[in-house]
Figure 1 (cartoon, rainbow, N blue to C red):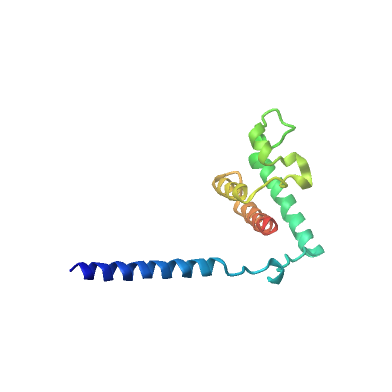
Figure 2: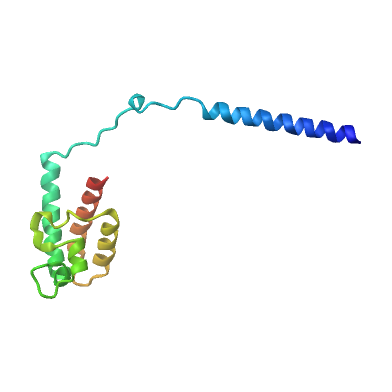
Length: 137
């Protein structure tokens, strides 16, 4: 019976050593050099897409002034500093510069619930949010 235990131990030990060398071999294999990976360039915006984005941005800004301006316009006494930190509608073309993907999700959620924003205006806001999201990627 003792010799059976020795054989099992030997086989287990041999398997462990074999596994260890396999792991070491895999770990020491050369990695792919970054220079050999294909470069995927982000498409540059065309004048047409920039114009469409500017239009959607301004339309969204105007729609949000009516619905959200009380908190998101730094020139108003009613503004909230934390709201203006996310976006300030008084910054004209740059009003959306600080928006992150998470902010876009929150803006969409709040705009959808806001009764002051018509379906037509919300459709414009959705276009802007989609375009802004693509720019953030």
